[in-house]
Length: 274
Ligand SMILES: [Zn+2]
Image 1: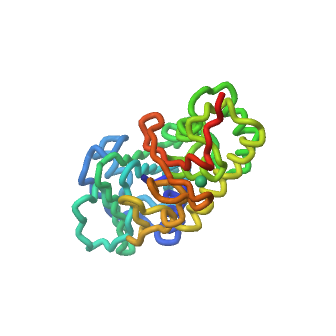
Image 2: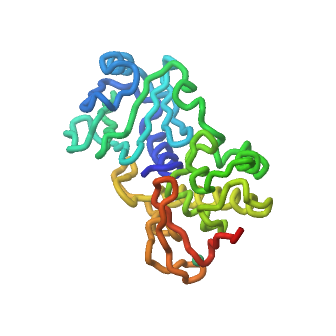
Image 3: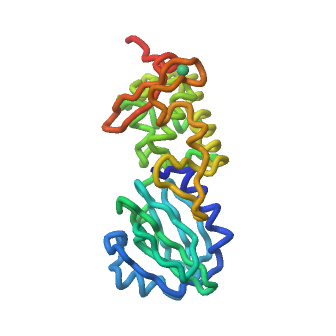
């Protein structure tokens, strides 16, 4: 599932290809992909617009248009944005196509159809309630400490809550907890100051490493060129059940935390006995 590093990679790859281009036509093959406005209005309002800027907020891609409207895309479980030619026919799972004046096209491929698009006047309508960006200066160990304080939720579940911290999903939460040597079921409020500092550093390390490796292609994620990312090749625990922990040679286990498959090393992520 695409998380911050996969979305950041997609933004970085799309920027040089699409910034400054005008959209010449819009084709919606799966109407429910468009969250707002109506499909007719979406097509009508987007056609003729120029993409001025492409950025990321949490797991959302944000396309700023020349009429100050904003196109927001969430890849959800299985979405990818692929650069094609205007003349390329869509593959089976393509849900929306944007074609550009220079002959390029952007295909939104989404196997499970959970991905969504919004065309809005104000991006806060979609991303206004997200928590801080974990790679921003605003996200300090003190900010993380304030988020954890008084919350009994297992730390793994808390890391997934987009309203508390934006952009971390299942894979990078597991990686960060392993990097910080914290058991995923630890109640958030039980973390000591040193552990919070370690988790803060770990979050940044695993996300930056994910970006450097151009995202993780564990499932259906592809970069806009159609190539895969390599981040999953360096995962320490995520999706590695039964394999040896690279840090201590323990055997990685999979448990369920808040309905999410969770990978951890029982030797270096011990659950403290209360
Ligand atoms: Zn280990």
